[in-house]
View (cartoon, rainbow, N blue to C red):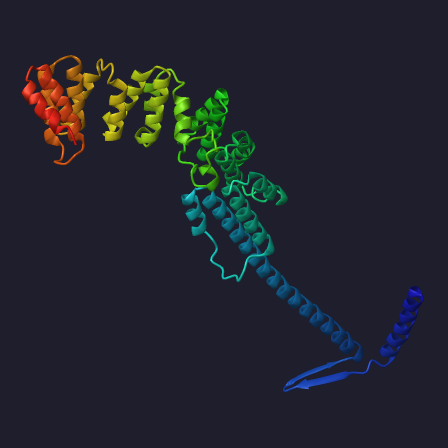
Length: 410
């Protein structure tokens, strides 16, 4: 049928063409001083071509407008996706306790005035909040079910998602479960000091010392600090008497690892500056060394820290380690006293050392200097009065000894 129509069209075209050749006729168009004269056939052809060109231009214009609209929609969609991603990461950072990271993400958030988030974003927010609520209440089974039902929506947010889940496991005492999400976070960012720190804490809690050493070496190799301060006391379930968390604190975990090293002094020098000033870490480290009957190494660590930055709390712990057998620690205390002659704590410690070796006159001088350095109503004065009473008793002056002992009473 199609071929028949085509044949008829060709025949009719041939007849019309022959007629136009015999009598082409003409078309005259005059505009002002311009005159256009042509045959009917050429005029018809020009009209058809002009109409075709006009239709083509209209279609082209429509496509351009449509493309511009689609491009604008794509741009808005892309902007929305970027904003959603930033919001997701910021929420995870807040729940993970990484407020600096959250502030950084929110600072780069696209400030578009959208009335509400899309359904996917709302579902994500609902999942995170529901899981966080269940975790904070101690309902770990519900927390895990929420995460599973969300098709790992939280875990799929690069780095931050797996780290939040790992921290939840750490806080709930499920240390072994934290390994998989931390490995996932490190696969995304191998230089994450926080992830490596948490992984080291996990292996220490599990007493997997080789793996813990590996995480610690990675931190040192990458020049990343050991992050401390995971939230471990912010939830209702942790107030229960039956709650037991193997991860007491990151500082304690690192102290356990450092105490296994042969040379505490070298390990101290290798720490970052801010870690050498971390009182919790240093005290925990010295305590671990004391448990291992290496109290003098613990004292050396605290003394090295005091040489760098004087902190009365560290001095108290240092004195507690060396008080029974001072040894060469007396010389160190004397060196500190030269730079801090008005420090009552050092003077009292020197008085105790002198008393242990029965150097009673020196002890008396140190205790009296300590008394003068203390404020009038300082409670520590009662302790020093008692020490002075014993010193005067050893010197044979019972009357003065009694006076000081009476002043020591509240």
